[in-house]
Image 1 (cartoon, helix red, strand yellow):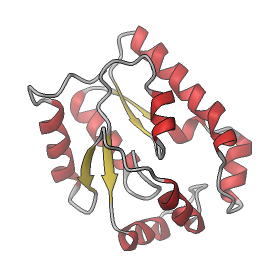
Image 2 (tube, helix red, strand yellow; image 1 turned 45 degrees about the vertical axis):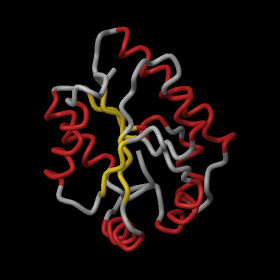
Image 3 (cartoon, rainbow, N blue to C red; image 1 turned 180 degrees about the horizontal axis):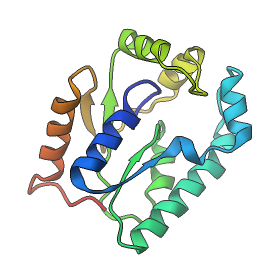
Image 4 (cartoon, rainbow, N blue to C red; image 1 turned 90 degrees about the vertical axis):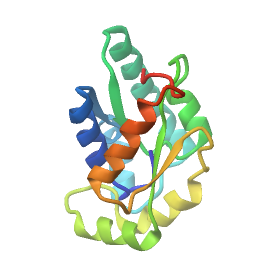
Length: 163
């Protein structure tokens, strides 16, 4: 989880591949209205996000029932959103990728074809509620360092297995 540009998709794909899990990108669950709204530089409201969160949650439950282990890349900026996403899912491991604003701006400025414009980064930073239930990872590290930190955390005897 984390704001746009932090590397959720990059890290999520690499982690899923390393662990042999299914990867889900929450962006794929946005409807065309939400995508168009963000592309036009307007931030989503909680009302806009609720059907999106419900679709992701339903898919997570379906995948869980099929026995799949999932890595989900999702902003999940508010506690309320995380509660909806992981309702009735035991022991989700939440990893918060965190980076400084300069890094985020640079990454977002370099990518093309994404519906989320740089102009909405500040609204995401303002919306973010510090996730006390998450492992905070400095996203300014190399991909390999990030993966090693995450894997060490989820394989720790003190950490429940991923669901």
